[in-house]
Length: 184
Image (cartoon, rainbow, N blue to C red; front, side, top):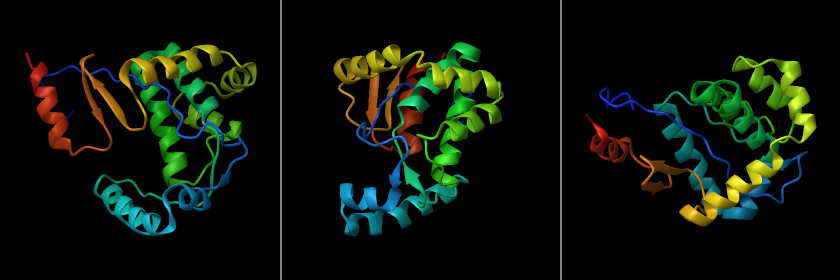
């Protein structure tokens, strides 16, 4: 986005669960990756991801637990209602840091409250929201709508300008090419 200064951007994060069967308390991340992708692929994938992350200042770490992310998606949606795109992006960045760098479990409400607080949201209000179940039906409907209307089957998935779609990790030049279609 920094390479396209003539374009105004608004990012809206949408829910997608890679594995809704995971328990909130989580399971060992590496064991889950090995079961899903196979140990040989994981042995190649993790060093590659770490090297790519380092180029962007992300210190990927693959210990810890992977848990059910449904409540993190509720939090992300709630953060939009609290402060729009800017607030939502801060919450997502805090969640990503906790999961990918600090080995925290996204199924743990304490982790979610900490991320929301780091993004500027009130901790007690966040805790109350998470315990309420609010936005559950909206998040579920949003996941189903995007899966159906846009054929989303994995992440990352990008919808640009409401019409162009990209699935999977992409080189920055691919985005720049698509963004330039919208330059004034």
